[in-house]
Length: 253
Ligand SMILES: Nc1ncnc2c1ncn2[C@@H]1O[C@H](COP(=O)(O)OP(=O)(O)OP(=O)(O)O)[C@@H](O)[C@H]1O
Ligand SMILES: [Mg+2]
Image (cartoon, rainbow, N blue to C red; front, side, top):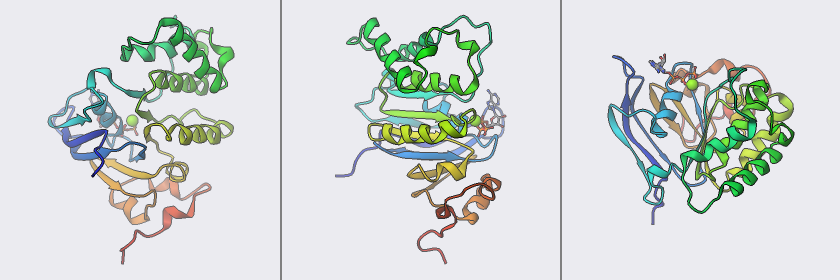
């Protein structure tokens, strides 16, 4: 029997004003998928993520959730695109993490369990010592780890990360991707990133978003693919690029 997708973005069109930002976008997200979402600035990646999260409604089409994922409970962990908090914003690190569980009302978890889980996550991320700090005082990289903890506190079935690498330094990067790989044993992951070179060695498949969505059923892209969808080809011309990115698709002439 065919497995049912966790989430089906069914022929979605969206526009902020006149021109469509997303046009007839169709994507199925299955258990344990690890999808890299790439595309140029303004291509519609964050807009797509917001549609999946239900923060904005499509003009046409619909997002379906598998029956065991009732939308109201939002079993999706979401790390939004770069936010540096106002330096004065009066919220502690641990409260930022705990705020992630507001999205899901779990009658079986108590406030103390939730706090314990938040501390555990911060510890795993190597920032337990920052728990009482004002969130606004953190560096971008520290903040991103806090947001990852926040995204994970509700034990999501799907984890969506919008440009999590922006502030991540080289030392943390490897660790970060290893952690995502481990998380992928338990949940589907959607990773929006400009860093095509790095993500192709971690993700299983790639979706290129530039108004339309082009889905590659592997992490292998040809330069022609990238050009055709106006993907950020410049990023593959430097750095330590896995050679697979230059392989041809099967069946290509
Ligand atoms: N709140 C908004 N109101 C009006 N237009 C918006 C809004 N958010 C995004 N847009 C426009 O929609 C288009 C797609 O933006 P989006 O943020 O989805 O792109 P993106 O692929 O995430 O880009 P980036 O790589 O820079 O993060 C852009 O032209 C942008 O200006
Ligand atoms: Mg974006």
